[in-house]
Length: 294
Length: 264
Image 1: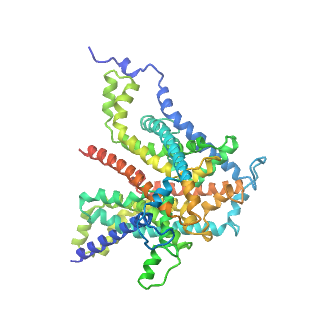
Image 2: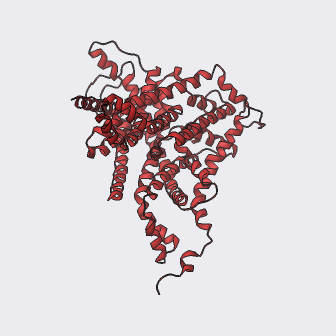
Image 3: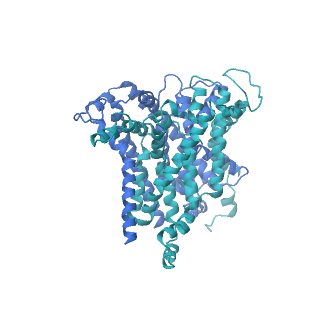
């Protein structure tokens, strides 16, 4: 007799659509107002050449987009791509052995602790991490005082592209290690044993089994590092000096800097968003499904 | 024999990379106690940099602004982000993929693009920049992090518990409050910790959406360190690092415990 009747359990007092609307509309409205509409507005602005705040808006073409090929901005874009690509490569080269060792050679009960330990510096301030690299790399910094104390010549690394690459690699390496670890952890070890039994050298087994199996993870890690690197503002700004202006700085200048040009700045932002969306599309198509949860 | 030597080589390399990750932290800590203001040489132990920054009213007011922004943004994001994650997990509707895409976009889109879009939007609708506009902009990315962590937890929950509550006569609101939320609590807390730390760390979005009179801590730090090396910044770094490490420890412990429970 106590069993609830069907009408009680399936017909709530409120209409069916009320619950989903109550749950989704606060976040939905917030995103609509502060993400979707703003993005549409900068898209519209990006079609207006040389607009300044307060001007009348009349869309007139892609001039702002062609401007990126002009000599004052094209090298900046190329430099951004170079920094992002270089960081991606160095993160892969440095991160793979670390992820490999943690996933396959370290004692099992240490693995979580090792991963947490490796990613812990991510919780510290981005600005202060960059600042720490200034203290290490500057002319009278830590590195040079070590070098000169053992009789080696001092290096001038700060305000050079290499300093930016070091800073960016430092910031993004933990992400790469996490994603590669997730991929390496699932590696089918029996395949490696089988390969060894059949006479493959460890090198052969690595290139023919480990790498192909981890390819989705490698793709995901590389794309993530590349995308994040492309939008990096702080490392190039603090470590690279005036000769290392990147796309993010170029955008910044169009709004908060000396050369105010909102239309051009919007076009540059739209290009950044497009490149990133393209990379996400690639990630979803070819990347490791598990990597997305990180 | 060969695998033995390979083990040593890769273990050594990993140790080296651990060193790389902790080198900047060690350097900052070391120099925060160094008496010499502007040199890499060790001149003696001192607490004076800590005293100096604790008496620095501009740093303290920037710290206060940052904590206020991060708390408000995290609080709002916790509520609407959790509701969104539950709603997205529970209901099918037209345009759901698009909704999800938009919600998680801030995780991956460069900060500068979000900053620019928000600034232009606020200018178009003529809302004056203030602390409130920073909070509104921060909610957008805090929301994504909270929802991400909560939705991961949701996929691992037992759906029968909620059904049982409904069968036993609980209203949908009661079952949400007393059955679902307690199970989600660890995820909500660790999502909030992540969102709080990221909000405290944000430089670009704050600089674009802060009105005159509001300076968040990263904005203050940026304006100081871009010009010169400042020893009191070392002390500030250490204090912030200890706070962040505390946050990280709590978040990781919660995550570790709830994961362990899941596998039992």
